[in-house]
Structure formats: structure tokens, C-alpha cells
Length: 156
Image 1 (spheres, rainbow, N blue to C red):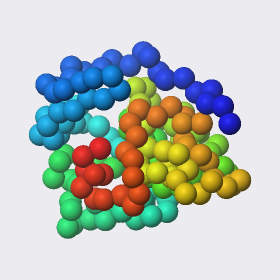
Image 2 (spheres, rainbow, N blue to C red):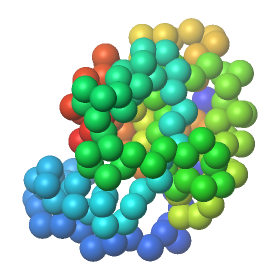
Image 3 (tube, rainbow, N blue to C red):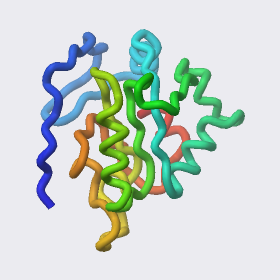
């Protein structure tokens, strides 16, 4: 399937923290990324299915407590959020719903694909599973790997 979605180029980007960059990558310290996130108050909207969704719930629970990074304000309405976190396997039947949720979000908006299934379909190369959410919505950050580790979710 082709990828007809184009990235939004009209987004105002904040100044990048100090770090190392090259073609296709940027690396900086965890503290600087957390400081940048706190400064800009990203309001995430979780769209969680499968095992990545369960891992995300564990990340938000008391033991790992994602709220300590200042990101505890999860929104469950797309009109109040600016970051769509897609975690888990997305079936092709869910594609139109996911796209509708994305379109209801206010600009500027960002998308994180967490896990192998949201990024590329993972091990589910079947007729019913979407082979990457970038087939229907633009993705700004891919968090690779499966299963998700709670520490990786907090560093995304």
C-alpha cells in the first residue's frame, strides 16, 4: 500500500537542545529532553491496543509514575490534545477511526508510533493488520521494539 500522507511542514519547532546530530538521527541527554517536554507541556492522547497498551498502562501506574516527568495530563478527547500516542496493533478496520481521531486534534499536532506493530505491523503480516500507521496518518517519532519496556516509553 502506498503512503499518501505528507508531513505537516507548517509547524513551529522549538529550539533543539544541545546534542549530536547526523543524517537521520539526533542524540542528546535525557535531562534535556525532559526539560524540553516540560517547557512545552505536551498533552498526550493515548490510542492503545494490544500488549503495548498494557505496557503503557503500567508506565502510567504508581510504580513507574510517568507523572513525575510532568506529562501526567492525559487527555481522552482529541480536541484538547496535541500528541497522539499510538501503541499496539492497529487493524485495518481501525484505520479510519484512527485517522478521524488524528484529524480532530488541533494544530500543531504530533504522532508517536510506539512499538513494532504501530510502526510496521510487527509480526502480524496479515490481511487484517495495518502495516504501519504511517499509511494513514503522518508519524513524527517511531519508538522501535517489541515488547515495550517502560523506561523506553518514558524516554520517547
